[in-house]
Image (tube, rainbow, N blue to C red; front, side, top):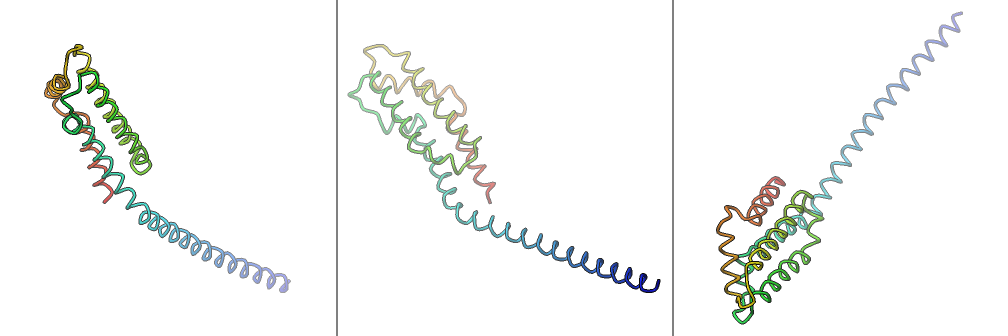
Length: 173
């Protein structure tokens, strides 16, 4: 009987010791995994941060370049008629957007949607102004009509989008 009690005490003691060692090693392993994940996250941030910064800069630049004010000043040609100028404006907006498509990888989906919608609004504005022109209208007439429509809007979508992108960028830090 005493052998049985001795055996039970030994088994319980060894089992308790094994359980303690297991729990200690599991807790230590969990700490190591958390530490490794934290380090990996930090390295990933350091690797992608320059690309994200560049994406935010390029997105703001895109929005500034497609804003009707800068677009007209950059592309205006007094020798064009309104229809040709309208086509050139739309082409320029689309080219700017397509040139910056890869930036969507580094900014939020919501902000990329805002950028896309801003581009669409610029094109709508150009078409709206263009629809009010006749065959004799000049690029100057179209420009004036775009500025007239633009003056009726408090905050143009590209300006709103720039503010939103700046806010998201500031939240990174």
